[in-house]
Length: 341
Image: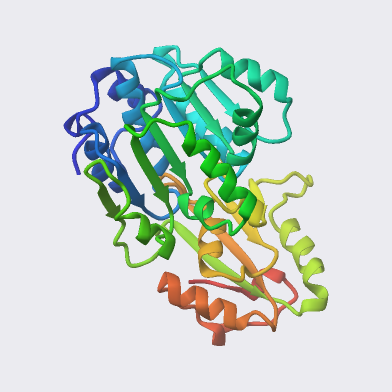
């Protein structure tokens, strides 16, 4: 694996990465960065926590530094939480440029958002519904000259199965220039994304992580078998095991739901607790991927009821890791119910 300079990044960006502790590119960055810098469309699929966001932020910043104007880049995100996360990476890595970004998501004041858009920020990060509302109701900004369209967590964006969502996307695409770079990034390769591989027009480049497992090695995955009726009591007891004698929590714990299942980079999150066993393996992968990111260690604990065993088998098949269910030891301490990988 080379360094960022060998991938074609400018010295100022390499220096900025080092200042932030990013010294070596991850596989998705190493493979996708050169293609994007060459001007090619790109589709990158890699497991969560693999550095996908920086894989598109870095080349966009380099191209922006060569010809700065606004609005230069549009990033579409399926959730407002992920939108804020993406904008933060642009802001931190693009600080030497004086980067101006704008977040357009629901739940915020439309008038102030419209004012931000009219000031022509370099990067707009948006959820499709709110951005489409602005396009329909305002003519104070233009996206006719953008260089980059990026769909992050593209499988979720394209598989909403919602007529309103499809209409929103059509509205957005209708105001974008035909000549642009389109970048799609996702943690999972779905049938919808497979179809799009033939649609990208500008010398499309495709890369998918070929790792045997879909979770990182630094993640310690555990299960707790619990009767359905007392699951909440087990959760409370479990959380108490992470506190010290002064009743202070000595670990940063995330109790994950589907809302927090994608794209969020929560600094130093050490433990992810699944209160329920996810119904789909890919949802499990995304949830537990909130920890053990960027080479750090982490633990995931999933509460499994008697009705969830088949779901765990599906997860094991997907991530290609099995657990020794016969090693269950029943003691008063709840941690005795934990299965180690």
